[in-house]
Image 1 (cartoon, one colour):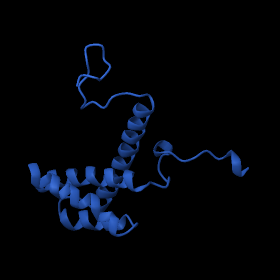
Image 2 (image 1 turned 120 degrees about the vertical axis):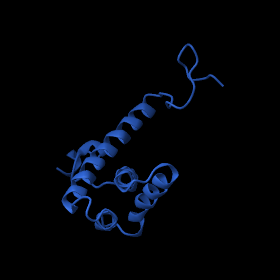
Image 3 (image 1 turned 30 degrees about the vertical axis):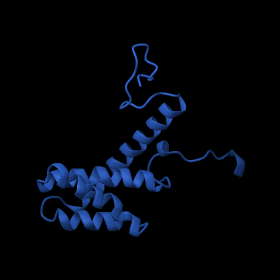
Image 4 (image 1 turned 45 degrees about the vertical axis):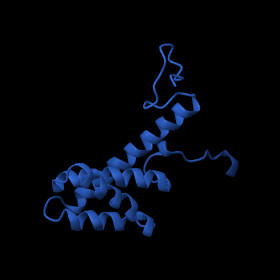
Length: 124
């Protein structure tokens, strides 16, 4: 029945329709991985990861990201290895987002916000 279907979530696994938030996070992780292989550090590495993360905005096709990484990493890793890493990073991105949404729904305070001694998070 049509009404028995549950909505897809980031934890539904491969084959799900990943939104831009998942893809951007996956691509940022891939960019940081590639930056490390290229010997980039610091701001240069983060700038490179940002470029990779926003490359997919030009097209919905993941091949754009694969092509960019394959070109930049030519001779360092194979296209197969890039695809495997992307699969790993998309799973990690889904896991992270699911965890963040769960924490948000539970009313938890983000890790970067100071907590008081009673754990309330109202240290300001």
